[in-house]
Length: 365
Image 1 (cartoon, helix red, strand yellow):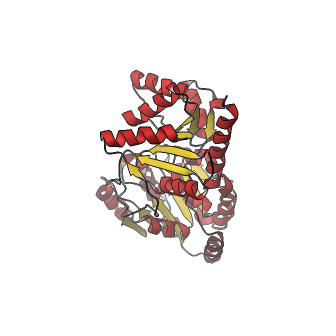
Image 2: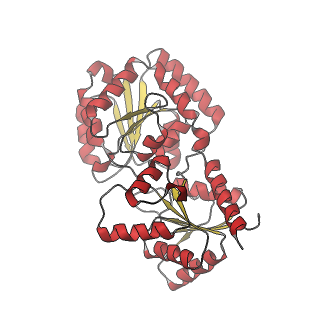
Image 3: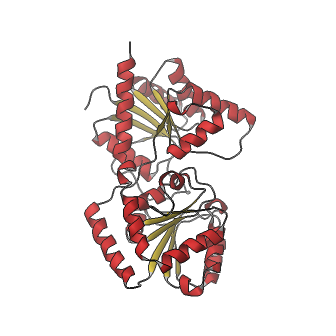
């Protein structure tokens, strides 16, 4: 175990990316006390995603609070994800008062909030020693929104899944050859079925596509949500090859991603968006809306993916038509996306955490 590398991490709910970050921190020699304020929910009903990593769920008990307080006192770095609960706010205030090394980790929220919440958020941002923001695009938005200097902020994206490079090269080479012979283009969406996820724009885009173009796509949609049945009927009315799988386990999501050609993320607003980044690390062509922060951060339109105006189904339809008419660009742009992988993988996050720990040691009296 490396000395002076105990980290206290207070997160939201267990997610594959947070479980993976926890695992990689442990493998890198950090001692980690990882907490969530809520366990697995119906929102993301994985059967299990623990990967053998032990974590804690806060149960609102006095014993739980004492354990959190004790572990946070022993840590060399606290990472607090957001300001969702009073425990999050307590940890931020505690770190400020007792001069603990703490990083507040945020994604982007452009939704309107009350003046009271704005003032609270501003104070918490000001008193936090470090600000981890999910991407440079998010840093600029947060700085503009709250008037906080960007020098205080560090680019700290959610980490992507880990893929086998040899396996991906074999799959992508095979798929490229299939498309050269005018094989079906596999397009994948993985998102919850709620209005914010942009399914209305997707449906409208598919409806205005030339039927000849549309028939060249095999579309697979993963996910559940309260509006599933509503959108299922609308997709069925389009008449092309569209499969709605419902909920799938994480391993199945990864397998679908490895074997698709194009990944579409159509959210009207997405505070970050991990699946598009997973797809880029698979060497897949990502088509993202202007409402997806990760896509706006990492995609150069027409260079390593495509971006369209989140409200314009006509723009999405033009991109899909262009892809169908020029299938060679799928893996040309996918290869360009794959070159971004070092900046999306977990090693980038670990390096930044290590630099923050060294910085704290350097500045101690």
